[in-house]
Image 1 (spheres, rainbow, N blue to C red):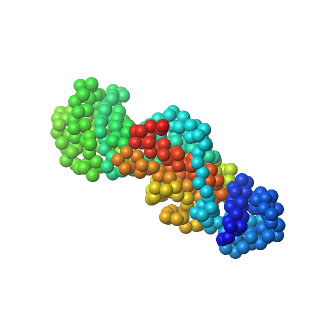
Image 2: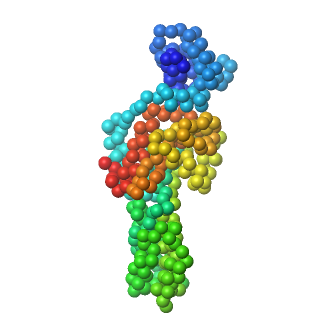
Amino acid sequence: MDQRKQQVLQAIVALYTNDGEPIGSQLLSEYMNLAVSTATLRNEMAALTKLGLLEQPHTSAGRIPSGAGYRYYIDHLMDSSSLMPAQARRIEAEFESFDYDPPKLVQQAAHALAKYTGLMVAATTPRSEDIRIVHFQITQVGRSAAAVLAVTSAGGVLTRVAHTPGQLTEEQLRMASPLINRALAFLTTADLNPVILKGLELAFGEEASLLMPLAKAAVTLLLEAGKAVTAVEGIQNLLRYPETEGHLRELLDLGSDPARLARWVVPTTDRLTVSMGGIQSIGEEIDLPDGLSVISKGYLAGGGQRGGIALIGPVRIPYRELAPVLEYYASLLGRAMSGVGSA
C-alpha cells in the first residue's frame, strides 16, 4: 500500500459514500485531480482489487470498497475530524430541552441523533447491579390504586401502579411509605430475600392484605432499577439505502433482544468502535449481518456505570463526518447521567 494506492482507496471511499454507485477511472481522475492517466488509475484499482480492498460488482462496472477496504480506511486513512462550534452549540441546545430521567433521556437523544444523521440509532441507559433506590414515594391514584415512585441512585425515576383489594386511605399510605423506605431503600438486588417482605407484612399488621401490593410493587421497581433500558430510533431511515432492505425485519426484532442489542451499542473499550458485518472488527466481536455497519461509543455515568450509543447503517456511511457527532452525543449523555448537565 504505497501512497498512491492509499489516495485511490481514500477517494473511492469518499465518492462511493455519496451515491452508492461504482466508481470508474474517469470520475476518479476528476475527483483526485492528479497528473496521472486514467490507465494508471485503472492499474491501481486493479491492484487494490487483488489486495481485497476493492470489489468489482459487474464485469464492465467501476469499483466499490470491500469490507476489508473500509476496515483499512478506518484504521489507517481516516483522519480525525472535529465538530464545528455551531454544530456543538446546536447539539447542546437540544440536550438542554431533554428530560434528564435516564430512560427518557436516551430515547430523546436517540431520536435527535437519528434525525441529525439520517441513520438508525440505538442508545442504552447504564446497567449496574449496584444501582439502589434511594427513596420510595407513594401517591394515591384511585380508590384502590396507588402509584409507587422510586428515585434511583443514578438519578432516574421509576413508577409502577399497584392495585389493592380494597379502598386506600391517606392514613394507610402515610403508614406504608416510611415502612417501605426503611425496608427497601438503599438495597441492591442481591440484598433482596423473602425475609424482607415477611418483615414488611408483619410491620403492616392488620393492614397487610391491603398494603402488601404496594410493597411488591416497590420490590419490582428495585429489580428493574439495575436493568439497562434501550431506545431504538430511525429504522425508517434505512429505507434510503438499498443494501439495508434485506435486514429491516432483523433490525426490527432487535427491540425484543436486548442482550444482542447491548453488544452492538456498548463497546468493551473506551474508544470509538466501528464494526462491520462479515469483517472482523478490531477489538470487538459482534454478530452483525453482512452489509451493515455499527459505530458505537460508550459513556460513563455516575458511579462508573456504563452505557452506550450507536449509529447503525450501511457500510458506506460517512464515518469521518459522523464520528465526532457520535462522540459528542456520548459525552453529553455521560454528563447528563452523572448530573453534571450538558454544558
